[in-house]
Length: 281
Length: 165
Image (cartoon, rainbow over all chains, first blue to last red):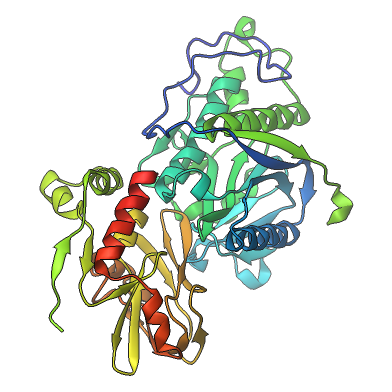
């Protein structure tokens, strides 16, 4: 059973605050000693399709800025970018081309070899990509903690907003519902500043995942929030069904709001939205 | 110079080391819960070590660092003939979907890189000070070594860093 049995809503809310599910207790999360909430600037591009290369060089620019601030012993606030990408494949530092089911010279989409950890993955429309560019000195200088905490954010989003009971699989970074991976994580750290981040399948067309071995895992599947909700819908009585079933736009919007809320709570950061327009790319 | 090894740590190292390897048997966990710091080496505050022997200095990451990283699955190294600068990144190590920079504790010319790390990156975990060495450098400013920490200072630095987070 993929959904919590005590499903207590009939309609998906347009904001995530109206649903108060009993939250799962934090999984393997060492409590962080609460400190004063710090500010985190957020660039909201969740409705936009941003070319991978542009977002990648933007991240590196931000990291460079933060490193200079650190060098001058200045305060280094955290940054969050949320966006969608045009279809693209990305590979990590140690990635193998064996996990591409096509010749890289004749790839269906652009393939970028990046400096993040992890194997090949796909990014595309309907998938929310979040790039936290944060100074782990403001949090916990522990990469394992950081990865587990990103997973915690995602698990809470799925639980609190969609009643989807997701979990970790030990040794397989990411967020899973059964054998389906709903969210992938791959990061880079330099002088304790993180970049790259996570990708959550909301309404993603999952077909491009079949042209690779996602994250190098041959016997696992990839899933999406929409896919799971549709499965629930088709297996349930009309009276219990989600009505009206939200459209893709609504699902993305609700997921984005939930991601920001949970990220803010789990990382103890106050989110400050910063204006940015797509032409700046 | 004779090498002396001593265990560095405290309950903090115990907590961090054990939590990153949850399925390991108790006996193994206990022995791995103390980071080793070697005598005769110099240490950077980004957890790299340097062994200066004559014209060449060998560089790698410390036991403390590899323990915090977890299983290293990939190592990125520069080409021989390239140069490194003190405090700047020269390579990277990947573990558990996170790739981190490795910074050079000194400046100089890279004369050799450890080619074994491409097939067996885990040498960094099993032998961080010996078989897991990363690069050999001809130092361009030997006085830079003076600015690095000795074993006792580094041990204290690790304890303070772990305690504050």
